[in-house]
Image (cartoon, rainbow, N blue to C red; front, side, top):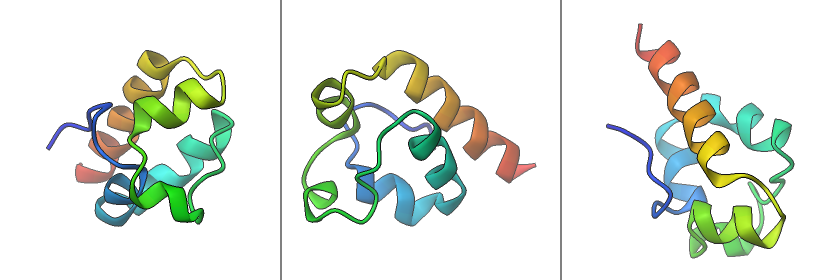
Length: 68
């Protein structure tokens, strides 16, 4: 399943724990934050000045690597 910017951070991390490093490398350190349950990736990226499209691309790349 492709990761999209409207998915919550928690949803992505729970389904693809290998993506934690990607979030951290992009500067989105909200992994354990209570807001991660409600905030989607786009909202988190915008709040932290992160390029959401680059983040999504890297998250999907990491998730795809894990499937192989």
